[in-house]
Amino acid sequence: MEDTFSNLATYGYIGLFLYSLGGGFVAIIGAGVLSFMGEMDLSLSILIAFVANTIGDFLLFYMARYQKSMMMDGLRKHRRKLALSHVLMKKYGSWIIFFQKFVYGIKTLIPIAIGLTKYDFKRFAVLNVLSAGVWALVFGLGSYYSGSVLVKVAGFIGEKPWIAPIILVVFGGALWLYMEKATKRKN
Image (cartoon, rainbow, N blue to C red; front, top):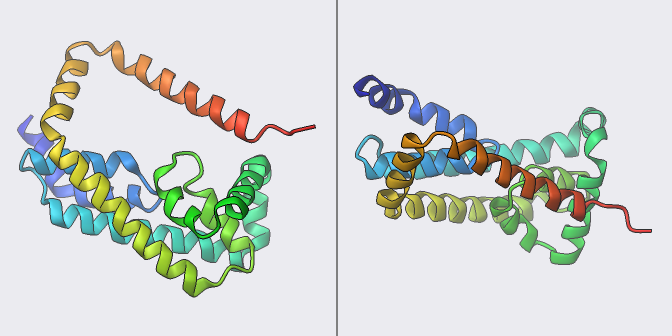
């Protein structure tokens, strides 16, 4: 167990950075809990998640804006989700840049959809930085202050490991049903 904590303290920040490039909720929540346990530094974890999340969305925006053909080849299977992203952009305007950080399933598609439009980069940059800061603070501080509860839940699941797959199936199924409904073609 001591080796696990040592490895998390050593490689946890690297993993947090890489996972947060794609907007990883799990990594910042894990870093918050580990900070609660005294294994990681909360301020550094929030800063790393913020920087990585900001860079990740900038990269997605840039790739969509300046490498459209390459991006579109990779998005052929996700055309309906991309269309949903455009609908959400029209419906919510610039607020979607903020909301996308908190909605699993569209957080990587929104910067791509925005990059495919003529949306002003400077405006996107400011809103992206602000929303990444709020995202990192909400999940970092939230998981830190909920650390005792999350540790107990993790301990309970550790004692009854058959619960974890059930939770994953229910969560994954709910997400899949939502995305199917949201992207369903209306006749």
